[in-house]
Structure formats: structure tokens, C-alpha cells
Amino acid sequence: MTSTINATAAVSAFAPATRGPGRRPEIDRERIVQAALKLLGPDRSVATLSLREIAREAGIAPNSFYRHFHNVDALAVALIERAGRSLRVIIGAARQRVGRERSVIQSSVDVFLEQLDAEDKFLHILLREGYVGSREFRQAVERQLCFFEEELKTDLIRLSAMAGGRVMRPEATARALTRLVFAMGTRALDMGPNERRDLAEETVCMLRMIMVGALAETGAKTERRQ
Amino acid sequence: MTSTINATAAVSAFAPATRGPGRRPEIDRERIVQAALKLLGPDRSVATLSLREIAREAGIAPNSFYRHFHNVDALAVALIERAGRSLRVIIGAARQRVGRERSVIQSSVDVFLEQLDAEDKFLHILLREGYVGSREFRQAVERQLCFFEEELKTDLIRLSAMAGGRVMRPEATARALTRLVFAMGTRALDMGPNERRDLAEETVCMLRMIMVGALAETGAKTERRQ
DNA sequence: TGCTCATATATACAAGTGTATAATAAATGC
DNA sequence: GCATTTATTATACACTTGTATATATGAGCA
Image 1 (cartoon, helix red, strand yellow):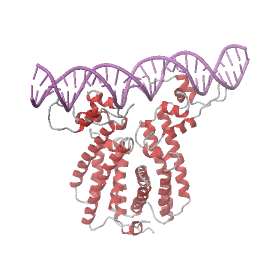
Image 2: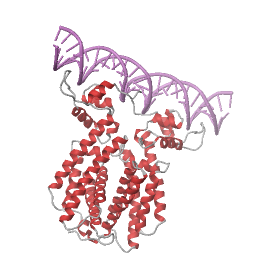
Image 3: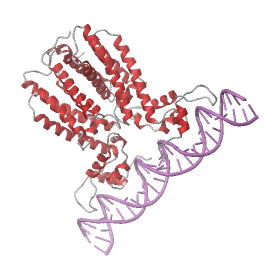
Image 4: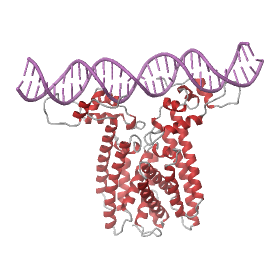
């Protein structure tokens, strides 16, 4: 069980280089990514996928995998980043369609829950894979969530200013909102439509609590570090 | 790869029965549980443990495992339940030592973070294994979190009544507090002491926001809370 | 035509897995 | 003593895994 890999292959794999001599690639990352996505399901997390299994699904030889990813973890990170990116696009679009703060909460939660049933399993990846696998793996998910928080933070500041209020601790508020939605979304994965409706309502209620707390003036005491 | 198992073995395994004839057991579930716990770590989740690996660590023959658990998933569920139980005891004890609502939040978070470094890895199990593995597996974790929420709910009602206030939606509030603490605790696993301190402060801030929101009469204005 | 690349596959191997089957070990009751 | 019953181990099998090594394929260029 050596852990090193054929050096020449690894090097050439990720520098697409200018089209010089040599056989033209017939396999691209996309093909492998799609195969991996196809294998994911309610009971299969990225961390449980094996290289051979992915290669089989992609219809390529096991070793061909190495020419496109260093290992399965690298593929997982790519999946996570891709999932985060496309999800931010979706949520961002939803946020732009509304103007007032309350609707933002409601519609964001709606969009989020819609994505649970989308045939691309991007949201599943961020939710379920959350905190297993290698350190690198987990940090990739964390990074994506931080992106969400960052965008939400600026939105919070902008919206509350428009409403004449002021969010006490924008980054903490954004984080609370984000983490709670993800936590509740993860629960929703195992639920039927009816339960999900209740969960959505409850989630909106939770988020409103946070917003009320964040906008409250009485935070003077809690604002201070101790 | 057959999935059935020697019937006689499986049956006799979980009916301790009255002491009749036959060799006396030298292996007990505890030994296996301990072995599994020893194998867990920041990069090893219960779901990644193999039967043989656990047996090796426990110093027993692979097949002996079957006499005590149907499979690794069953062991995982046992671990989860045990983790939840002992954690509830710890948190419950911490809650009883304090009287007023503010301190409850602070001290609960403190106890929680303390447990991150405890040598028994019970909290790790509930945090990291959260939502991977089989359905049965996930439901076991969910069940434990619900226990937490239930206990917290009654505490919330009692405490807010004592303070003359009233929690708007106790179960949603309890759930928001619980899930947020678990989400933040999961992040803490990958952090050093300094970062954890900041995270603890931020978490307390978040929880206070929720409490303020939960105690507010309407969604609009806030009620003073000490 | 060959040479030299980049790319993809074939083959092979050591290691690990779950578990069926059979054997061994220790206790009981006769 | 012996048969019976339970607990544990030993052996074996078919299968999967990651990956090292070697080979084949196809493109550009001399």
C-alpha cells in the first residue's frame, strides 16, 4: 500500500498544457464528476465512494481516474466547491427577486427546500457530507458555508439600513441564520412532503427569532466581549 | 456476498437467557464498545470502522462480533444512544447548578465545549457522525437530539415563567438553540483553543438573539431581559 | 516512415473485507 | 464418565480496494 503515485502521470494530469503532440483526451473531469453524482444518494455519501466504483460508473479504467484527480478526496472537494457555487447562484437569484427583509427569509427557505428535490445532488453534498472524511474535505465544506455567510452578512447590513434599523452583530447573525438553515435542511432530507412543510414553517419562525434578537436594541450587554 | 447470517448464532446472541449449560461468556458488549471508541478520532467516523478492525482492537475473532451485535451499524446505534444518554446527564447536571436563564445559556455552552476534549468521544459521535451512514443510523442521532430538545423545552417554559416572561414557541426555540449549539460544536472540533474561545462567545451571542426573539411579544419590538 | 509525446487501458498484486463452515473450549445435567 | 448446550476461535472463500507496472492508442512533427 504505497501512497505515492506515478510522478509523470500526476504532473501532466492537471496542466492541460497547449495542444502539442500526443493522443487527445477523451475523458474529462466532467465525465467523472457526473459519474460520482450519479452514485450519490440518500445512503451514499461522497466519502463512501471508491475510486473503482466511480471509474466503473464513468466507464473508464480505474487508473484513468488519476489523470484527472489526485484521489477521490480531490474529486470530493471539487464536488463540494461546485455544489457551493451553484447553490449560491440559486440563492442569490432568489434574494434579488425580493426587496423587503421578511420576504427574504421566507423565500430563501423556500428555495432551499426546493433544492432538496433537485435532481442534481449539489445541496445534498453540502448538507450530508458536511463533516466527515478528511480534514481537507471538511474545510472545503466549511469554506462554502462561509461564502454563504459573507453574502448574507452584506445583505443583512444593506436591508436593515434600508429599513432604518441596525443589525447588532452582522457576522454572528448571518452565521446563525446560515447554520440553522443547513441544520434544518439536513433534517429535511429524511422527511416526506408534509413533514417538510412543517419544518419549513418552523425554520422561518426560528430565523425570525434570530432577526428580532439581532435587531433588538437591548443587545448592549451581549455586545461586549468578556 | 451473502447477507444472511448463521441463524443459531444470531438468535442466541441477544437473548442472554438464564444461566443454563454451556461455556460462560468472556466477551461482553462493553469490550467491543470500548474498542470502537478507541478507534474513533478526528478523521475516523463510526461509519468507516470495519468489523474486522473493531474485532482486532477488541482482541477477539471477527466472527465473535456477531454474537454481540448484528452488524457494525447496530454497534453504531448503540454508541449513539450511549453518547446521547451520558451527554444529557452531563448537560442536565450543569443546568441544575444554575438558576437564572442567562447563566443557563452560558454554562451550557461551556459544558458543551468542555466535552469536546473529554477523552470519551461521546460528543464527537453525536456531532460528526450526525448524518451519514444508514437511515437507521441517522435516525438514532436524530432521536438523541430530540431528547435534548425536549428537556430544554421544559426548562425554557419553567425558567421563563419564573422570570415572568413567556416563550412564544417553546419547541421551536428549544430546537433552534439545540441545533445551533450542535452546529457550532461541530465546527469547534477542527479548531484550536483560541478559535474555540471566539466561537463560544459567538455562540452565546447567537443563543441570546434567539432567546430575545422568543421572548418578544410581537415580531416587532423587544422585551427587556435583565 | 519513424520518433516522441500525452492519453487510456490491461494486467497483476498485496491487502483488506464480510461471512459461511467447521472445529475447539468450557460449562451444565445425567 | 458422557451427551448437550453455549461461546469462541480457525480456516477458508469470494470479492473489493488502491495502485504499480507495462502495454496499447493516437496525435503532431522530423
